Amino acid sequence: MQEEFPMVQIMGQNGEIIDKSYLNQIDQTLALQFYRQLICMRAFDQKAINLQRQGRIGTYPGFEGQEAAQVGSALALDEDDWMLPTYRDHAASITFGKSYTILSAWNGRVEGNLPPEGKNILPPSVPIATQLPLAAGIAMANKYKNSSQAVIAYFGDGATSEGDFHEGLNFASVFQAPVVFFNQNNQYAISTPIWKQMNSKTIAQKSIAYEIPGIRIDGNDIFAAYFETKKALERARNGEGPSLIEAVTWRYGAHTTADDPTKYRNQKEENEKHRQNDPITRLERFMKAHGFWDETVAEQLKEEVKEEIDGAVKGLETMPPADVNDIFDYMFEKPTWPIEQQKEEYINHLRGVR
Image 1 (cartoon, rainbow, N blue to C red):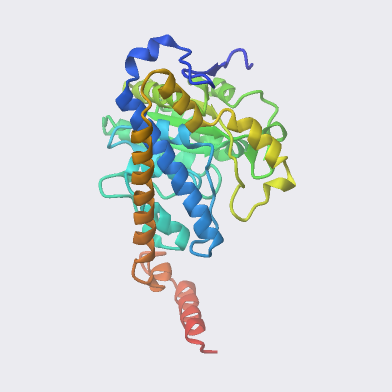
Image 2 (cartoon, helix red, strand yellow; image 1 turned 120 degrees about the vertical axis):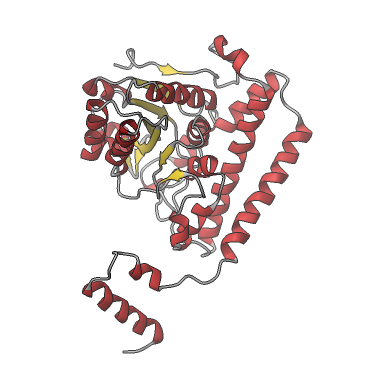
């Protein structure tokens, strides 16, 4: 089945262009845009992990290694498209939303779940795969409204073991909904490797059951992520229905900051192997090979990125204190008696009342 779903690559591991038909679509401006966002998202991820270790935010799920899949696919969207991210898709959300509001969610702030003005981004889905039927429903609604908006839904390899994955794809297929199901196969669902999750050789082949296009891409190739997602979104807009994209990638770090990956894989050996295929290093190699690289510009971009991330952290830590009433008052339209009772008990707890 891997032969029927070969890995699509535009840029090879050493930065060479494998599919020459894309050469006239990739210029220095595009490469620099991709490079800046990749290094920005990696800096954000590393900063967030440091913040968690310092007790300045809560448990955090890192995405280092998956930047190309998220950034490339997010940049393929139109401004008014819909995005349904998971808890690990900060790079996609920030790239599409052009905002760091999501950071405050990891500090327990409800504001972190609000999309930037004018952006159709749902709150990160923490329960596995529950966003996929929602993505199909949003896409169906767009179709009924004759809207040109497309939908992208992100999910990991572990989500394909959930019923919601199949329900979402089935509904989207039956109703030919304009949605792209974007899988990031980072090869582990927490500690469970992909080969223990499924007997299928690929995730892309699961598209066959639903009679929809399925494609398997090199998730560390930002050009493949961008151009293949763009094609799938255009198919969706043109009334050709949903697509399934499997982006094969790797997460360098832990599942979350509460996880210890050394318990289930050889971190040093595996990460050294995968760093040969690092998405940022590959793009640097491409830019140097094609005369797009400028050391001075690269250093300027790194300085810009540092200032941007520091500004986001400052914005988080200068927010006014959270209102504890928000947790209870907006759970339902009208508070139920158990919610009111819980609120009273918690407020008394905070006041030290017994």
